[in-house]
Structure formats: structure tokens, C-alpha cells
Image (tube, rainbow over the protein chains, first blue to last red):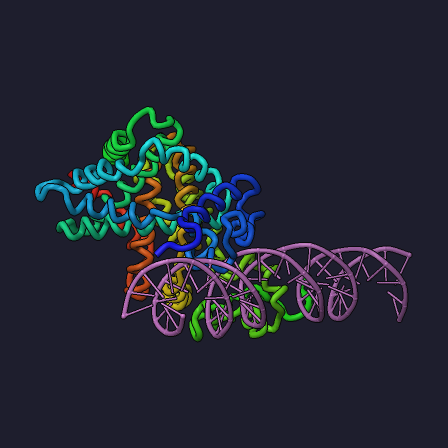
Length: 190
Length: 190
DNA sequence: CGCCTGATGTCATCCGGTGTCATCACCTAG
DNA sequence: CTAGGTGATGACACCGGATGACATCAGGCG
């Protein structure tokens, strides 16, 4: 199916991330991204629903991995154990190779409110996916909501530490540790 | 300071909400909102940073009320008690008069992804405000994060029920009850 | 060779958002 | 009463994100 230069999508993502890093998100136009990728503005919007989306490839896969990780937990696992197992399974994605990309992407997203909004939307979809997967295992409200939310909080904490530490420790270990800290913290609420 | 017809901001909010209800958010232009309010597109953007923001007035006040409610809790209060007290204090805003507005607004926001994104951003700012207020009381990580997140979850649950029940029960009671349910749920995580 | 198909380019258009300047109503000084 | 002064609004131009319609090109296939 591929004619012309292949990997148009990846070229657009690469060009976008580099330009955002150089000039910032606001000062980069879609036409400029497309030009650097050797394509046109119209083609950009055939690959990405909007300008922001170019930074959020693979989010669906992450959500799917979380849901499948929860669904695939042993039948007798508690909600906490199911989420913990999903975090460990998801860790397969966060290899040392991805670290450089994550490190370049993070400040770009953090510097722009529009991008932060999109990230929050993705986060919410991820929580919803965990919620539904847990509910399918028979976990009822409001436990299912708390479990999904804490799971996502643990993921965020682990991701942050993973980027800072530079892959010194495996992502899965960081995530499971973060989740355990959150469970312990619930006892200190009063 | 007021010349021309007064209450331009309120007129714009009223016109926007009505038009969004009639035609939907996407099929309403800023020029149409301004026209119904007897103003121009340029004036709309002097009152609101962007088209979405016209639906989010008063969010800063809500965040402030939450922070102050937590900061004003008795010195010996636990994190849970501080959040619970803040929820009760915030309830003052959710009067029967506001119910109609909330009921008209909710389906509009729910029907549009852009508006949902903005709502998630506001939610995140609210959580951050609670987080900081709790941290100022000496609550440490990760307890402070869990407390703020559960507080916001309780707020959301209470708001949902308040809209559905039609103000049959006071908002504060609904919120405190929801928070208590969440605390209980943490024990069922395993 | 000629048709079909899918990816890309070209062009036109809409709308959100912003900068700039003019204009108008009200206020206050004299 | 008049002359500015001030702040809100209007008028206009413009940029860039986003989309629809149609043309074009490369390859597969009969």
C-alpha cells in the first residue's frame, strides 16, 4: 500500500516534536510541520484529527494494555492486585528506547495549556478503561472508581520518576511501588 | 463605569448557553452569540479568553472556596475532615436557583469533547488547589494527593446526584455522604 | 495497455482568535 | 456649559487551524 516515501505518520510526528522543541508549540504552524516532513498541511490533517494529536500517538494502545492487564488478572485477585498487575504489564512499553522521546515530549506538553488539556482527556479515557475493566470483574461502585483513579495516579507518579531517574529502575517496579504508597496513604486520611 | 446596556458578560453567557442548547456548540459561532447579546465578536473575546470559557464562569470562585474551606478547618482536623468541611462550605453556592442553570449546562458540556477537555482542566486546577491547601496544613505526600483526588471525586458524585435529584437534598449533605462512601471503599481495595 | 484504488496535492472556504485604530458614552475639571 | 480624559465598544484586517471538493499520481491487476 505504500507509495511515495513511507512512514509519513512517523515523519510528521518527528518533525512536529522537533519543531515544538525548537520554537514552541504556539510558534509552530501545521504547514511548517508538514513541510519539514515533505508533505502538505492537508495531508497532516489526514493523519491527525488536529494539531495537538500529533503528540499523542499510542495512547489508545496504552489504554488497551491497561484494560487487558486488568481483565487478564487471576480470578481471585483483589482490585488492588489487578491494578498492580496491569501496571507491571504496561511497563513493557516503557523501554530505554522510549525514554528519550518521553523526555523530549514532556516539557513541550507542560509548557502549553492546550496540550495539557488534551493530556487530561487521554488520562480520563485511561481511567475510564480501567474502570470498565474492573467493573467487568464484578468490582462495584464506588470501589471501582477509587481503584481506577489510584491506578492512574500511580502510573503518573511512576512515569514522572522514570523520566527523572533515567531508566535506572524498571518502570514496572516504580509503578507497583507507587501504587503501594498510595494504598498505604489511604490509611492516613483520618 | 457602566455605559451602554449593562451586564454584557451575563448577556453573553445567557446567549451562548441558549444557542448551544438550541443548535449545539459546534454549530454556533461566536458572532452569533455576540449578535444575540447585542454585541460584536470582538467584544466577546474581551470578556472571554476563548469560545469555551463562556461556559466556565465562577470556576475560580469554586476553587477559592475549596481552598479556603480546607485552610479554615480546625487545626486538629484530619485530612478527611478538612476535605469534608470544605465540601460542606462549598455547598453554599449550589442553591436551588443555580440548579436550572446546571441542568441546562450539563448536557451541552457532555456533548462536546472540546468542552469536556476544558472541564477536565478546571477540575485539575481544583484538585491542585485542594492539594496545596492540604499541604499547607502539613499533610505530606502521597496522602495529600489522595485526599485531594477523593475530595474532587466526591464533589463530582454529589454534583451528579444533585442535578438528578432536583435539589431534594442539600448539596452539602450529598457531598459529605459521597466522600464517606469513598473512604469506606478504600478498605475494599484488597 | 487501460482501469481501478488509495494516498497525496491544490484550491477555496469557514471560523476562532488577535492586533489596531476609530468611536461613543460618561465623567470631571475649569 | 464646554473641553478634554477614560474606558468600553465597533470596524477592519489578518493569521492559522480545520474541512470539503476535486485533481493528480503511483502502483496493482486484468
